Length: 416
Image (cartoon, rainbow, N blue to C red):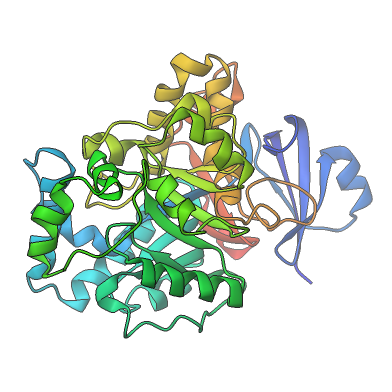
């Protein structure tokens, strides 16, 4: 039985108040106890201790939506105007020959960038036949692998076999309302109800998606479908992408993680809350693709709101620290001093909740997995949450997943 006591100047549980001069005890990868460092030292005799000193110990970041496999595409896009032109460039790039090695290298480099920016869990979209799976399994990161479903793959997809282990689990991810016919979405829902697996989907990302569900003239059908030899399909008419999926019963007692949720009406937010839908914000991707921004002020009131970098196909880098800072800046005007806490919450417990994993990760609580990071105090602010928001890799001293150290600036810790 592996036991370890970790003490720090400040512990940030996220789900409760800050703790000063405190510690936590890890037993077999889970948090066994948390509280006063002196109490824990007295109670747990002869236990190995890791004294981290001045800084903040907090849950590891959760990058709830990314495409690590698309790193190779970074230098093949640019100069586009709007979502449709960007999508045209993506399709064109994917038509070129890309080697398995390029994809595997993209995943490997992406994993390094995640660990370097404090990420302990990734929500990875997989669309290349599982080339990323063995690499992710070996990485030590906690992984939710979303197997992407689109109409062109419907006949070859396995809707019923899903692998799950301690650090790895698979879920279905119908790509978007415009790339998945109602028939495919129905198959996905049947699989969900049978296998009890949460789902994910890109939703309400662009104005063109609104025109698509409105059945108005739109560039998705007029310009994108011909590029991929896809025919238009019959569908219900709806005012919004969220309303479209709702009309198909997509959210009826289902656990669904929605990505982007930019084009959402204010009066839909309460409904989203009532249906217990997860949302993953990707603010830098939204700015990169010129699609606007979500109703951030309204989303701050919701429980299941997480944060993601998206992929290098629609972002400058995969640095989660940078994503966190941008979210904080966008929330600052509406939320004031609460913006720093809400941003850190989205990066941790909010991300866990958006992925329906809040019972396992996202906060430092007894019984939860020991997925955590330690940030030094080189850029210390009076507000500890602002210290986290302003951090970079220079501040990251330690990263641990299920009690295993994946990153440390102290080589002596490798043996723990």
